[in-house]
Image (spheres, rainbow, N blue to C red):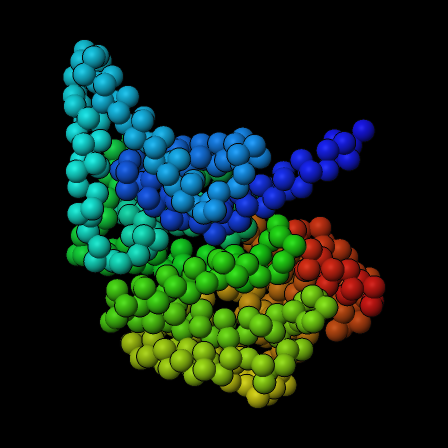
Length: 431
């Protein structure tokens, strides 16, 4: 017998609790983790305490009811757990001195410091999320490890979402994150707010984190929706904060330009029926012209340096899309040129894929398919559904329908987003 049918009221409560916990994890993870980390000054301990708080919520809310402020309840529970563990650790160090000669009194001092000085923490960054990202982007870790760890632990993305951002398997990303956390523990890397002079050496990783966070929200995988507004809004806020923090940094301007120009099209990503709309089919009169103007000015600023960086070039490409009066009037030859410059400063397979797509529209499907064929051996693209979609589009335009059907079927097997799956199924039906 279905347990839900036996107790419909209990089923309703359980669904409400599940929704509340999911919403808190998605929207409030960062603030909960930040507050707990301020209390513990220990990365692993903060993570464990926050996870424990979510477990306790799942156990207690069905009987006690969902609190008026779930995030506040979770934060208090996590911090109380952290203080309890720190207090026990301090007691243990006093009672077992022979086991802790090398670091005697460390946790007791840490706990006392938390209680005494938490209110005096540096606030020049002005935002918990940005402070945490800068803290996690410690130069002792590799750039990839910094970015992956920050996306997972600070931004609240799942390991699967982080893996998709890096175009690697979930198991590979899980191992990478585990190694990064072990290095933190073994090297005793302090998790504290960096001095203002330390920020420049971390800024590149911070920009990558914000960009990947935005990308994850703009093309959501493992979700019924195409866009995760909470992730997009969080990324936009962080991009503005980084820009204010580093007003003379061209790449900070470029990132904000890219995100602003892309976000201008957010409302046109789906039609009224909830179906995916390609860029060619979007109503450009509905794009946010104010965001386009602001983003274009930032892109121009970012391109004024002698050697424009990755985000400046990507923003320039976005500006060409946004400023074109129609899909047909898009300056595809110039976009190809920008992608060629981008590949020189960022030789990533996804940049080469986007260049191949641009070549298709600038020079024809045959040229685009030839460019894609050169990328077939790129391991990062073998499970990337947009690569299979790009091949399917070229093959379909060339009339090679059986091969196009095979490419779309491959893409369908690789995407986990229901709206993208529906779009691909429609393409298969049309062939």
